[in-house]
Image (cartoon, rainbow, N blue to C red; front, side, top):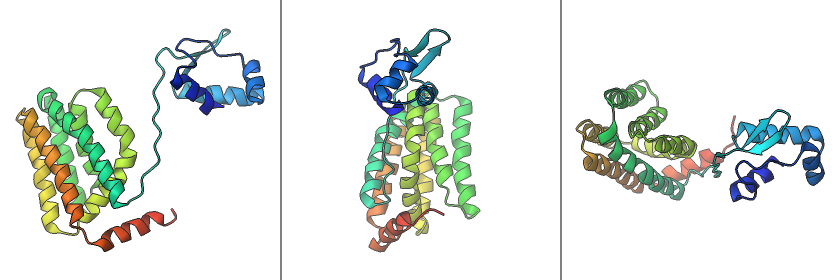
Length: 233
């Protein structure tokens, strides 16, 4: 019931500010009890789609929250490449803006995030979470909340892709050094306030990540796909 009402709101069949039918009417419409209706309305309120007014009823929010649903990708080469393409669309422009809009504290945060990657790897970690935090800090420095919100949403998908790319890069010291140098180039461009250099550095970083994947042996992806098919424990 909550899903159907949510879809009706997103399609515009229920307009912003429109009053929803009464609980009794919704119960008859969906063939459910009042308790089920209340639970569905509660879910819609929590997702920001509906507001309730005591003694008046429930109304579609004036600015309903848009919701995007995607299935988690498989750890295949094609899935990782598609997500690299998505990262390019988001992160290149975010870096371009960050170069001209970042504050001193935001630049410090980007620097700290880069140090965190190195420390995580030195301590035996894979640096995936820290890598994600580095790129997110750049999105924050764009001072455009939509970039940050988009990256926050896509991080659940990007984490798998970044895990694969870092797993591949960790197999060669040369690759790891390249990643460090690429991150440094991004940081230097943002610090210098050079938007084109920042954008080009991120684009180069993601292009090189794909090239490094292209050089991975076939058994690498066989191992990755087998691990993703294994049941969670």
